[in-house]
Image (cartoon, rainbow, N blue to C red; front, top):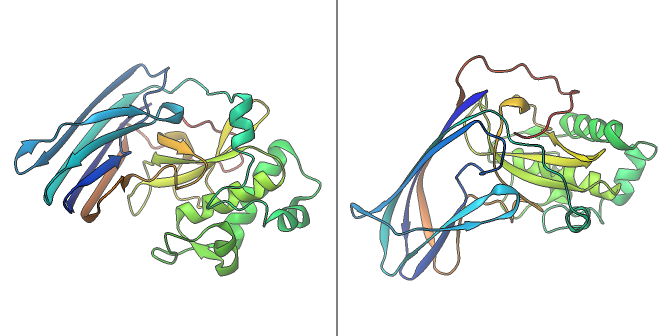
Length: 268
């Protein structure tokens, strides 16, 4: 499978602002070809970038601005094939079963055991996916950036990150390592960066997308972490910025695969 993705960002920084972006596709092993370009311009000049490796093949691109600056970012990539399946070290299994800022699994333990008490493994993962899909309504702009899984469950609505956080929290409550992945998602409408959950069962990571908005087989990883606090596409490390434009594209060069929600799929 060949996928072509792109992102265009325009933002204005305050003085003395340091910026970290996570918009590049993850450079994992296994792809038959991987071509990409990244251009960052400020005042018509190329901005010096520092690439920093993150977990699971993800990458930050870091830049600094001493003066208030208008910045334009253009990224594109064409990736063919699929990444090699990723395992999980013991340290990662411990990290991804703990509560985190947006996936408060400790607070949702009674809910998880009430709804999924006798389920384990793949059966549990599928049940959590279906439950979140059935319980929440997808409404653009309906949640705040500070909302976690508990708030999402109370309001019964949210966007992709909220669906993923709730699934992650419920799985961790049942001792299943789970993490959030930011992805390019061909077939998604409206197009944007997308957030899904990954669960570690039977020695492999499986994608869970409780929104059901795009076929998992076509998704392309950007980065992954405990929750959205680890996977933000744009953040400041000192200073501030105002995002003025975000445009994302993601297509499969060929036929978009059909989605079977019950099929185990690894992010590749």
